[in-house]
Image (cartoon, rainbow, N blue to C red):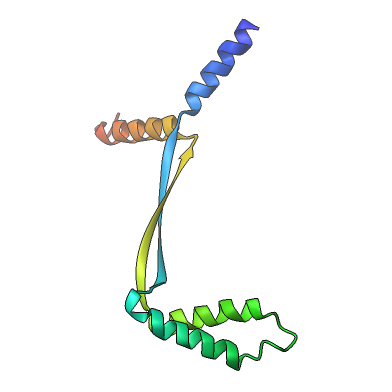
Amino acid sequence: MGKTLLALLVIVSLIGCGRTYETVHKWENNCTSETVEARSLFILQCIANANPKSDEEPEDWIRKCQFMAEDTYCKKEEFAITYSSATGSGIWKEVRRILVVQEAAQPDGE
């Protein structure tokens, strides 16, 4: 039991913890309070023109009209979102970095 626990402890410590970061750039509508009235009127007119009395659900048209209003009246802006996640390769990345540094420091011919 003791050897198994010790082996498990060694394996867990060798796995280590590292972090990976990924930045994603997205374009999204940035609506201001100045466009609220225009967007509201657009949505009401859009719903009236969509004929919600047909077979389609009116809730679907409300959302579609909202998207169209935002695309029409709001400025598109780029947002950078950085995701971070834990990985189990922290110690191995460090070992590889040390080995690369040692290889680069050795003179040719050794």
